[in-house]
Amino acid sequence: MAGITRLNGSAQAGAFFGYQPRWFEVADTGYDTTPGIVESNYEKAVRAIESIASIVILGNPGTGGFMVAVDGNTFDGYTSGGTPVAAAAALEAVIEAAVPSCTVTEKTLGSPAFTGTGLVFVTAV
Image 1 (tube, one colour):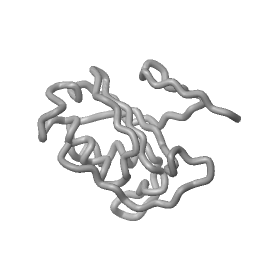
Image 2 (cartoon, one colour; image 1 turned 135 degrees about the vertical axis):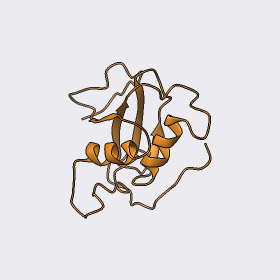
Image 3 (cartoon, one colour; image 1 turned 90 degrees about the vertical axis):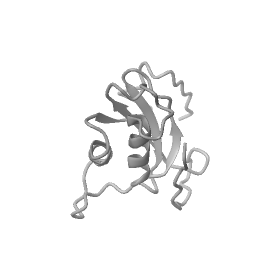
Image 4 (cartoon, helix red, strand yellow; image 1 turned 120 degrees about the vertical axis):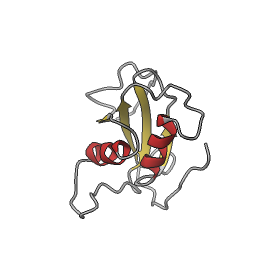
């Protein structure tokens, strides 16, 4: 990748390596088509996400999309008009400005769980 943007954020109690991760599934086809080239849909989507949040973990693109974790402390969930929106809606809006279409869903460690993503978590309560 050409470069990863890192915005400053403060660590949260119980955070994952000093970050407050928020997990999102970006679903659509075409992200796995030549993902390594600069103008691929995957690269465009990643740059769009970086415009409003620092990426903590970035998943490989598959036939149905990819997973991404962003630092909740750096996430800007507002529209250009200053109106707060749902986190998934904010990411979906910036990604759709760069690529044709997608569906973004925020995932949690509870329900709905990460099904079919290849990620396994063990948490202590």
